[in-house]
Image 1 (cartoon, rainbow, N blue to C red):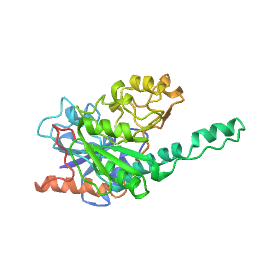
Image 2 (image 1 turned 180 degrees about the horizontal axis):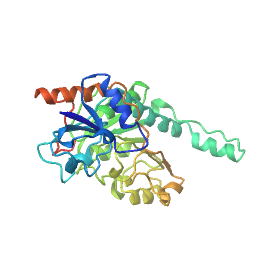
Image 3 (image 1 turned 90 degrees about the horizontal axis):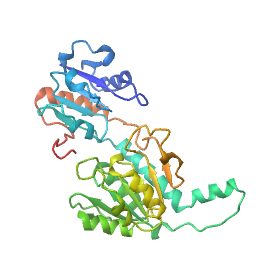
Length: 311
């Protein structure tokens, strides 16, 4: 039995680096990369960042896909992935903290009028504008799982009024937790900043269309650090022209990398970052080694995904 590290992207850690990180927690593992694949029939576990289309056909004895992160939509939706293959993801604190910090940074940018002051500097204009007080600022967090819950509590602990929304009702101290369509509309109507940490599922794809954006508070900020297909990008452009929202920060896009010819690059009401809100995995590589061990032992997996629900 062997574990294949197949990162699937070129602008993050290499397969060799991840293999070394996993081996620190269990030096006895048979860990391979594409370059050292050997007999593909030996591979029962593959650890991926981007699940490449050829993996199911390449690995006939595959039993577990271990995602090196949170989003699993390309895995659970793969038409050739056999029903018995299990899927697990990681829930480390390091990227949850980084994503929360990313969202906070862009909320503060708007709250403290940083874009306005940067524009004033370029024109040598001294224009004083009062920032909005934290205690009078409402932040909405969509998705209250591992990352969204961390993000919501960070804003709460800094003194913001926080509304949270999730598919099913949740309870977090000091946070008004909402669910359902009515709850989502209430959040959008009330919040100065809306932060999305939602996964990609059949219920969330295209969720933010013209109607949903129209429910937002005029001038609000929309930050998407979840999945790109949450947003109908054409609807977003139309809605930005109506100041609902006033500005959008997109760390995830429907197509990545975003083509150079995309008009989103040149829209002054959109800030684009190249999927960098969560980067480091901290000590989460121990969970990759642990799930390998649990699979061999016939034990329950850490952070196993319900393939039918998609998370």
